[in-house]
Image (cartoon, rainbow, N blue to C red; front, side, top):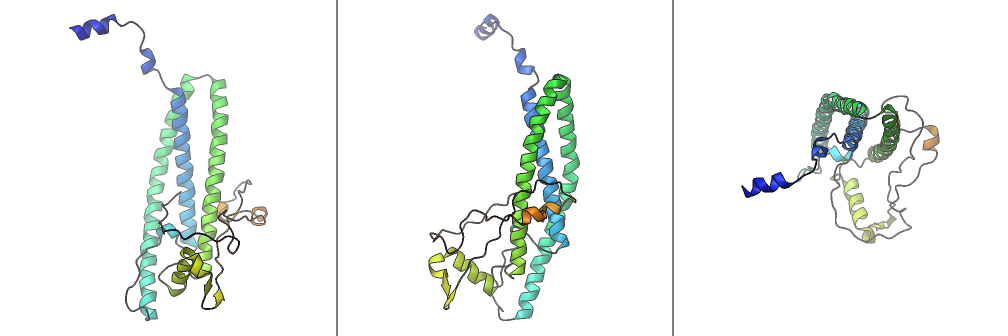
Length: 247
């Protein structure tokens, strides 16, 4: 009874609790559209990797042979099995992305209908302009990141350093993580190659995966990834930590 009396004595209006959160709806629309953009770019990127028969670093197997390393045929078969596994996983991811994209689109459209019904046309137009600009920056940043990784992985295949258990890749990994000892190897100078990232291409893409290659202008203005050029900076030895997969 004491509780009921206390509640009855409280005056005020609590209808604000059930009112539609328009700002929250706009954030939901932004989040869903970002997710859709990320899914689209990831789908197109994986499709391009598959077309050129390359595997992203994040999907390469770390299993390595512990015997018969001198047997070239054995090592080639081992690598072929790992490649097949990675390519099958890529197909699985692409299939799932294709299923998920329509679901995200429907959720975004439903949230947009709710917000259109709750605010004036002028308010929606102003908010939509900010949203479009935010999504544009997000897309360009993500395209740039994926393009940099695509060029980096292309360099892996060009220099035959796809798997770390191969002799060349193993030595390069040691030199990278032991710079004090890896600057010279058997009398030779070790130069660390790093994939360079192409600046953001603001021109329209002619095909879904064209952002991975960049335009002629962007390819002419390649910049480094910001980690320091080899030979100019002596890095401290750092423990190896596997990077988390990012979009």
